[in-house]
Image (tube, rainbow over all chains, first blue to last red; front, side):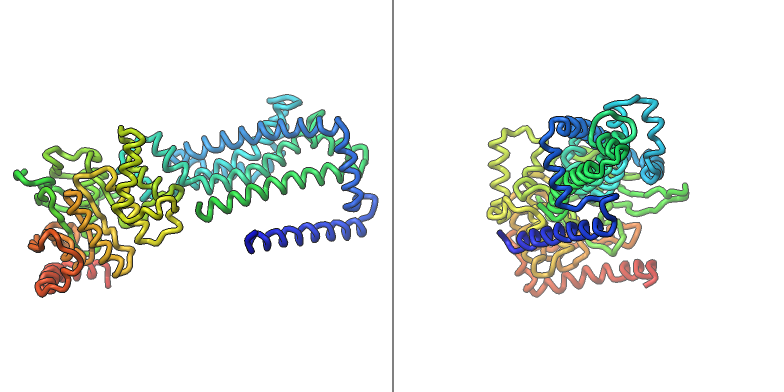
Length: 249
Length: 266
């Protein structure tokens, strides 16, 4: 194992211990009324994971999240590339995308609900609208930032437009696009779980909302803990790939 | 077009239109020159005189406002076949290895995969990059990356090679050595080479003829024949008449450079 990898592992271990200590202190201050200690949460989570009902909810959330992420990435790439290549549309649309990015998406939820109804399609749509804008904005700026000399090289080599996009614009923009996908991943997960919390009969968001209404603190802590672990693990993996893409092959 | 002319420019001018509908910027011309087949032709001139515009016109990247450019007897309307360009800036694709970058030049070629691989390997070897063929540009020096760009240009076997200040970003020693490489490649390929440079000694060392350009709008105010042997290399700078040659170039250029500096308020 090389030195930098070992240092990285030590840093991660210190971070985890720090979080656990902070959690324990917060529990001691707040008390049983609103929280559970780390070891109580781990024990309940383990018990929860033994039930079939729990895995049904996990499967529902993962399906919705996977669909929402696929739509967010696909649509985001399409919007980003189109606006980057068509400069006039890009200049006109970018401020609108930034404005949409900054408004709380929850304000759009009633419209989503009326358009898609209760169930899978509403939460997929709600997850997707969270992720699509960062992917589009990062893609737009990544393609715009492609070094003009690379495009000129493509022109000298007489590449047709489709080949120019496929072989120069896309690979040149990949590191920035990937950062957009990483941001989009987190926001899509938030959107999907929020969608489940407000209008769904299944999924982790529903489980969390149900636990809140039943005042089941153990379940609240377990679901929150699992969502945090999932987001952290995937985000860390994406961050590692992101770093590799940004710092050369 | 004269019988030995490979490239001909007749009354070529370039005016860039102004964005506010005004008269525009007269960047170049009129230029009249024949570049002979297999010749190494360099152009020197003050900053902003339109040297790079002239190269872009020859590459078909832009069109002249007036006049006609012919390559091998055919007018250049678009990017012509048989022309390769090496730019000053690093144009290596960072996501491709050295081999991938060189092979990129053959993307549109109809050759079989084996034939492409053979050509790529041969050019990589010719450029002295064999032990770096799997290396990525980020791991190479500026000089090595420029060699990769030259290899990518050579792999398509261009009959006219356009060099836009290709050694501008390199240190003096690397420039001299790269100059030797370019002279060797010019002899081996038999291609016509058109070099844009601001370095008078570089032009004097490399070229058969040197066109000296005026301040903007750039026109050719002098064409100097070096009369060097074809098998020259960077040691040509030791010759007695090398100094006289660069002095002549500077004498032609000095007033023009002063005009440019005056414009820039220096």
